[in-house]
Amino acid sequence: MLEGVISCINCSKEYFNNLTKCPFCSTPHGGGIQTPAIKPTPWYIKRLLPFDISLLIIFILSSYFIFQIIVATIVVLLLPFDVSNETAVMDIFSLFIMLISNLVFSFVLVKYVPFSIITIEPVKKKRQTILLLIILFLVALALLELSIRLIEFILDSFSVSPAHSSPYDNYFANPFITVLFSVLVIFIGPLFEEIIFRQHVISFINRRISSKISVILLSSIIFSFNHLPADIQNGSFRFTIEHLFVVFFLGVVLGLIYLRYGLFYAVFFHSLWNTFSLLAQISISVDKIAVYLDFLLLIGIILTIILLIIILKKIIQDFEKFIPRGRNFQILTKENGLLFGNAIVIITFDLLNAFLPNLEPNISGIGLGLLLGIHAIGIVIGFLIFEHISRTRRSNRIMLESDEIGNISK
Image (tube, rainbow, N blue to C red; front, side):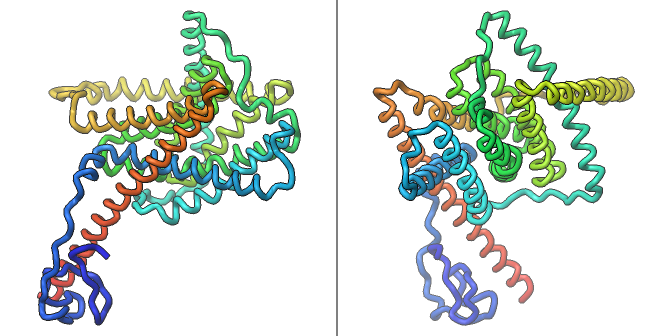
């Protein structure tokens, strides 16, 4: 129970103890004896609160990291053989652990993490929305293809060596592993990532930063850098740069979809995107798939050209509306400072996640120990922030209910 708050002996409702009787049922609470007031916010919480956006993400990712290690340890102890002997068995084991961890952790996150999700109006025309998202998917593919071509041109101009492989190439050598990986990528992964990076992260940031563009950009940065560990394992700088851009681009599109249509449609688009990406990797050895993918890309380019013509025509018609008159654009604002500060903390955390496990073999144990320590600190600090948020929200709710009852009694 909160300090300064008591429970009525008659109706069990909670209220502040500076009242002489329960505002709900008017039962006295011991002759109006005063107890200590609500404890003020500790100084260390005040220091941490400006970075509560970062701490939320660190808390979630650290909790998942520790949870995955626990699940893996339990499964290893139950197995009657050593999984490290065979590469294929190790791949199956890793995918199996990810499937279990993603499903269970998604449930725990939705059920028990104590903060509210932003309200998004339900979609009325569902079929039209699905069709619109498919068109958006094709347009996004075309825009991404053009952007990747530009990035490749820039990387070639700096003589960056081409990507030699993908971290997931070995999954396609075994049919069973391919099926298991496909289930993870098409169904489980999008659901897990959308619950974390769109529903929870965007909802949390949205209540602290007013600019929707800043909310989407920050959540997309978090989303892209969270894929860094797998990219680092590939060992190709070029692949890492290109994949980070692809995931950031996808994060922006998914953020827009989530804020406009909600979680289900973001998961649908994400699944569609991952299906295309999976087929694109398989098409390296299957020419027929490559033909269909090229055909979809051609449709996307045509739709993109049509869309750009429509947008350009609209801009020309409403040209005066796009001229900023008397607007004072400021970059160094308090809100942007908070945004940049949180982004730096999150990126630093993700970089440590990526590089510490990839230290030299003779010091890899130290790197893993440091990583576990960082995640443990992240869980503790995140818990303190959540505890403060929960106490504050509960205190505000009790005060609001007391005021409503007082107004009714008057």
